[in-house]
Picture (spheres, rainbow, N blue to C red):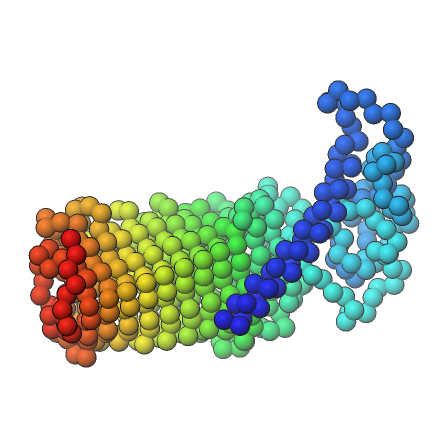
Length: 442
């Protein structure tokens, strides 16, 4: 929780900084763009003069070249006092602060000597400032280079589409890790010539096993596999990773957390399998992580978990195709908690492997039609050993074969206060583990 509060506070600071810079950039852009008002039928007689504007972003501490600058003719009233009007007075000097596209250049932003490395401070890196034509070409190599050259920085993607053709790696070593921050309408999309089986975004994929405890972050935007990339985001060899408010779509596996990853905080994620056959929402092999407030649709399996000591809270999954292979939550780990989770229109809401010991609290299974001939809330593949409390199964009607719990036997398994219509239930296996009485619903 402390980590989450820290990160949210951090992103608030970033947002404020972004807004301030965007305002100044917008002012500059408006001034230059208004230089020609002939299309609007306006005759502008105000005196104009030249002023230098940033054409391509420059990081603090970097040397400025002519490619970074452009000269605009603008009305005198739109030029701030002190703005430089001569490119030659700027080229070859070093930036004392991040110079963003659209800004005017002032002497306070320049120095004749490269500042010591320890004095260089970047608040964030804007991708579109550093990589040209990001919306029209494959930026894989340029983006990876930008990440590798800017350790411990926030990489910001503003609105638009960013195309990649192979995996982008976020290092998990503490001295190399970065954070990705996408605006709500920023999309990282797999190119039609996508290569490899790896994830679009791999956190820790190039690191040695169990090498790091860095606080990586992936926040906001859309990761679109376009039906060609197999995995959206993978996490391995990393601890303390934060993933929030991301939409993952058109992927065979939206998120893959590998066994070498732990202590993740995943919240507010949306998954849409789209037209990808047999899509999986979250494939988790890691431990000690929290997955909360997650919504999934068009997946054959919502959550497939083999890790231990994880929490799945308020995770809702929906299947929109008729398939007796569909499973909302597939559990083969131990000591995990499923709380306020919902499976809708799956043949099996919750699939529990033989002997798996986990807790299901206020978890629900719903069916909105009779398309599935078999409707099972909890299916234990062998011996039932978990605990189910106050969980609801709402079968559609009597035309399907319905079961609250289907299992061979129960060993240590407990069902408390189950909620379902007993007259619609065709399987009495739940009685082996029932403690108390069923709470009937219609």
